[in-house]
Image (cartoon, rainbow, N blue to C red; front, side, top):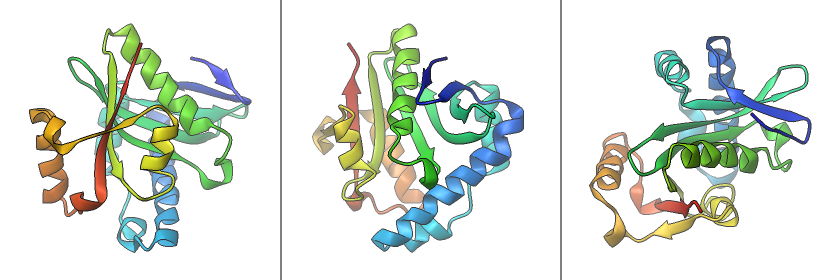
Length: 175
């Protein structure tokens, strides 16, 4: 995969599972600054889920020259699109466009598989969530535009205790 700012990108490997969970946990701590302590207090994804996603080649990691993972993107290929499930970069590496490059890695993979759209769900008002994704070319999906798959995902979020009134689905069309 590509290189940007002395960071390279590759599919996650089994030995990356623990560091992916650590990156997710560390990134979640940022939510304390916006009063969302529930996210900061949440445990990382179950190890089994991370291992399953790694085996399916549905996590791309950003690694420095010394092979230290500094970020990841987890996604789900769907028939006409890829759904971005999670994007996390270590706080110490924020501002280096690593997250944007990870999204571009998923976009390239989606195009190669003839999927012409990326979708995701994120917090509407958190600066590094919806406003960030808008800068990367995503646009809000109005509730009336949600298809059955996105409605099911929203209902799953609600079942997990997420406040969907604070969230928005977004999409980026791929040329």
